[in-house]
Amino acid sequence: SNLKSHKISIRSIAEKVPNTMKFFCANLLALSAISGAAAFTAQPTAFKSTKLMASYSYLGDLNGPEGTKTTSPAVNAPMKPGVNGSNPTASSLTVSPEGTTVISTEEMWETLAPVTVQGGSLRTCSFDEDVQRVEVFLKTEGRPLNANVELWQGPDNSPQKMSIYLEDGSLRPFRATVESPGSSNAIAIRNTGQMEFPLTAGVEADFGGSTSTGSPSDILSASSTSRTIQGGAVYTTPFSPAVQSVQVMLKSDGRPLNARVELLQGPNNNKQVMEIYTEDGCERPFYAVIDTPGTGNVVRIVNTATVEFPLTACVEPYIVDESAVVDDQAKGGRGMTWS
Image 1 (tube, rainbow, N blue to C red):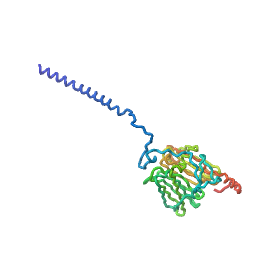
Image 2: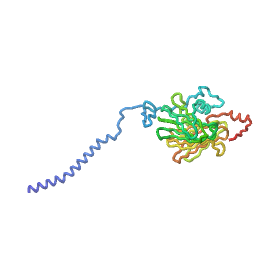
Image 3: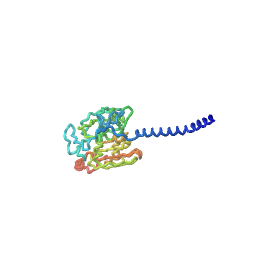
Image 4: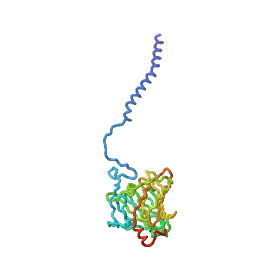
């Protein structure tokens, strides 16, 4: 009888062990959850800093020295002096909406050290990371111009490309500003024309700082009314004969930008065509100054991308010369010109 009762007690203990283990495991999980919950709660900050730390990448420090972000230049830029420090003449140069004196493309060529690019050849211009932006100039002796201008940043990386056609490279030279943030930047100019059509190229660097007027695209977008051009849409703007040159700015919200800018003088008479590609339309917007001599000039902007990639465009007069219209009428031109 004692042996039978001992077997019954062992059986009862064995039946109670699983329930005890379940209860112990449940309590252990609850305690671990309570102790570990502090890792997911908001912890108080250990210190407060007023500096915004820079975002470093393989391109280098894009936000300036000392690991802090630098502010963009002021929109109200100081007055830009004339060529070689001289005061620009008021007869041909006007004042922009922000009160900044502009300089014509012809006067800018007098300060450059141009190089000749033969037909089918390639010339490159590299610069250090202190250069914030460069201004590219192209012209010919009156012959047509066909060229490709690219911004190189590192090996096999072209974040901005432009394909240019000019009917008369002397009457309407090419002038555009290329933003160059980061390091290892270079401008590549390839003359895609034949050997009989050489071109002259010039590059001017802007190092920023107190002597710089700032980004021209930022100044134009802040002082004028922009227009959104959806993918596949066309936007045209006619100008008065008194407008000798216009400034065009294209940008996006950070997405790629594909567009075509045309200068027409008459129905389907292209005087200048620029096909633009930009990897980041916010970091590297497109800005160009287009000379518009004569009458009947129209700027046409075509967003060649799909509907998912809209762009923002600003088109404003750059140089307005009322005396050009008066001189034409005084010579008996009667407003009629060949184009």
